[in-house]
Structure formats: C-alpha cells, structure tokens
Image 1 (cartoon, helix red, strand yellow):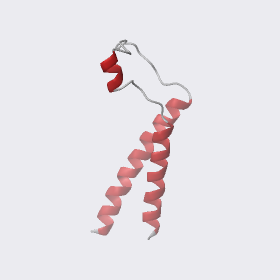
Image 2 (cartoon, rainbow, N blue to C red):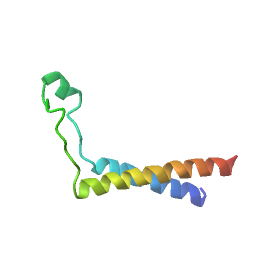
Image 3 (cartoon, rainbow, N blue to C red):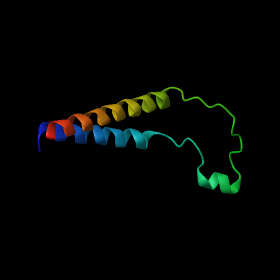
Image 4 (spheres, rainbow, N blue to C red):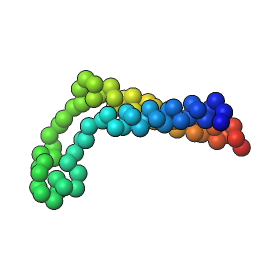
Length: 76
C-alpha cells in the first residue's frame, strides 16, 4: 500500500463519518405512504453544526473525486 492509497482511504472514512453525522432531511417513503410531512413548501434552513457538517461533507467529496481522478491518471 502506497501513501496515496492510505490518503484515499482516510478521505473515504471521513466522508462516511460525516455522512453518518448528518440528520435525515425528509421522512422518505414512509412519510409519503402515511401522509406525514405534508408541508412541502416550508423552508427549513440548516444552521450551526448541521451546516458545517454539510459543507465539510461536500468539500471532502470534492477532494475524494479529485484524488480519484489524480490517482487514476498516475496509475495509467
């Protein structure tokens, strides 16, 4: 395992952890079936730590994609 493989795994683990820290943003299919959550047009903004976690997940996702492309070019 080379240094960039370890870096790739660390970024992947950070994305997984950040994704698990995020709360659910909707009720999903069960809400559609039971009729719950009918306030479709209500604006809910993320605030505080939720917003930070969302932006961190987005940022690490971009880093992950960049590393995947970079390492792919390096290999071939």
